[in-house]
Every structure is written in structure tokens, then in C-alpha cells.
Figure (cartoon, rainbow, N blue to C red):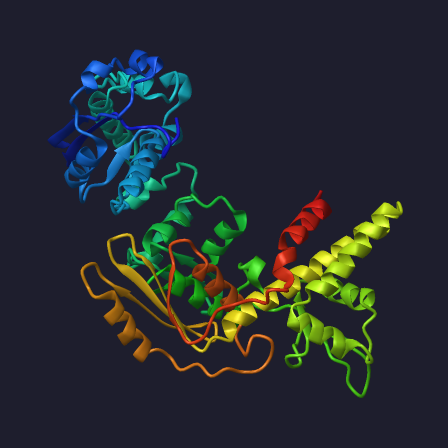
Length: 492
């Protein structure tokens, strides 16, 4: 069964505080269709049982009110949570984003399968002596899950599990020294932001972002992150700094800026963020040069590797005589030049020169990707100001002011507030950004890419903009799919 495609026909829950039951919720739901035979056989629920039952749009808000403020516990939680979350989306109901504990995962970490028989809810209920036998009916299964949870919590005695966060990420195989380090994040908030692990000298070891700082940081001390280098990093850490942000976009931008300046050793994939290789115009001392530095707006690039830049230079036979002409053509869009290169690839393949065709294919793909990135990010960097908003998941809006591709201000408009008015105030107080030189007008490529990716998300609304955000009609974008196919062929 799949969330978003199949239907919920029953919701059952038991509310418990400190081991004492406080209330129960149970409701059948009319799915608006006849039940498949195997569902009736599995649950015992018939079409007659659902005749006259309320629809999901009536039951779900009542359940969310019943469960409000509680930690949600379920056996094989992703299945149940997936259906509830998808249903909220279909009905336009804000998802409450509860803390969730999965008794299936917890049982796998704590219990011996040879003794339980399996980790199915029915077998676990028998093993712990649950008062209720699970029978694929929502309320009975929920009641059995309560007994399973209480047994699992008893088994945690002596493991220093004190909070729900500890319970979520518990693993019995974690080095005790790692658990002791958890004191470093004692004050970490449940908020979006950036975190920095620092070594004994105070230098950054690792920089990351999180939608929920406390929840993410706990994973480093519970064995939830299996990467060896992360365990090594945490063991070296002497402090953890956190910076709360208005929303995830601001957090990622801050991370990009910090990575560009600090280059921490354990952020391996981002030791050179925002950099690339460029083909610079010829000078009096020589012809076109491959360099990390972009020498003005007439450069070609950025390419991801030095080899890609050099191969493009050789294939296009760039020299002092034709560099300016080629650079102008690429700046205007470059689609015609790319078309000629693609024709060369096809001609080589048709002639049976497959190695030559593959060589030209790879160079052409690298050029397309570099040019497309330059055109997309350069277009964003050229806009003096634009505003963006996206839902915060609680009925309000996350807001951003972007100037020349850089995040100049970030904020939130809570539910019920005048979002347009708040956005206007945010823009009035935004950081002043003066356009610089180079292909991205002084903006860091990594930050530009972060902002660009956020603005293209389906849930983001672009507000007032000082100028249109466009890319050349005859640009490299029309060859993006060709380049993607070429990259896939190269990898295979």
C-alpha cells in the first residue's frame, strides 16, 4: 500500500503520560469506495461497517487535536506517518511535524530475534505479555504498542537514555565516550540553524545545517550517523557552536559563507566551495590561460575541473585571435556553437571513430554544464533585488530578500500576520549589496547555487523583483538534457 494513493479507513490511538493512560481515540472512515477483499480478510472491517462513517476530512482534524503536543509512537512508524502526512497534504491541513518514536527500530536494537520470533507487532506483544492482542484494528494495535514501548523503555535502564531525542536515536553499540560528549550540545535549541564543531584550538572541524538543531546534533552522539570520519570528528571536538536562523534557506547560505572562509577538514566535499576553473582571455604575455581566478567578465567557465577547462581550450582551438569572438558567442547564448560541437560528435560516431566521438562528447557536455551554470547563476546575480516566500509548515511564511544573488535578509511572517507588510519591512532593513566584478558580480558561486536551488523549489513564491529573472533563449539550457545523457554515458 502507498501513501497518497491508498486510503485510510481507521485511526486509533491511546494517549499515555508517565505510564498512565489518559484517553483513547478511535474512528472508522468512509474511503468513498468499496473495500478490496484482502483488506476485509485482514482487518475484519466490511463495507457495511463503513456505511455512514465520517470521511477523512472530518476525522483527521479531530485526531490531530487529540494527539497535539504529544510524542507519536508507532510500530513501523514510517508507514503510518507517511499516510497521515500525505492525507494532511491532500486536505490542505498543516502537518504538525511531531516527534516520532518507532518501536520497530527500537526493538531491533534492544531485543534478540531468536527470543521474540520476529519483530512483528504480534510477536512482540506476545513476548512482552501485552494485555491486548494486535489484530490489525487500529485501536487494539495502538494499545499493544503501548505495552511494547513500556517494555523497551525498561530494557533501556543503564543506557543513559534520558530524553525523547535519546530514545529516537538510541543504539546499544555506541562508544560510551561518544555519549559523554553529548554535554556539548546541552543548550542546542529546537530551531533551524548552523552548527560548528570546534577542536581544542577553537578551529572549526565540521560545519553543518539542520532544520532542527537539537535533533540533528543528537544523532552525532548516539551512533545514528554511521560515517567513521564523523565519529572521529566528534571525539576530537571540544565545543559546539550553534547559530539559529529564520529558516532553512538562511541556514544553508550561512553554511556556504562559513565553508568558504573556514574550510574545515571534515567537510571533505566542500573544501573548495564556490570555486571553479576558468579560461581567461589572452594577455600581452601569452594566450588564453586556465586559472582558478576569473579575470573579468570575458572568461569562459567555470568548469568543475582543470582538465575540463584545458580540453575545451584545445578542442575550440582558442588563441589570441579567436578567444574574444568565441567568448562573445558564448555570452550571447552559445547554442549555435554547441550545436556544431554536437554535430561533430555525431559525425565521429557515424564514421566509426567511437573513441573520438566519446572524447568530443565528454568535452561538449562539460562545456554545456559550465555555460548553463554560468548563465543561470549569472542571471540571478544580475538582479538588484527580488523577494521570495515559502510556507513555514505552521500556517505562516518564511521570507527572504535576495540582492545580486546574495541573501540580504531573512525572516518569518507568523500565521495571521500580513505577510506582504512584514516582507516590506524586511526589505527596508536588508543588507546593502554592491555588485562587484567577474561573471557573478562578486558573489560566491556556492552561495549563489544555494539561493538558486531554493528559489526554484515548487513551494517558493517569487515576489517583487527589480528586473526579470531570465536566461538566454538560445542558451546552453536547451542542451541540458543532452549533457545529462552524456554524463550518464561517461559514468557507465
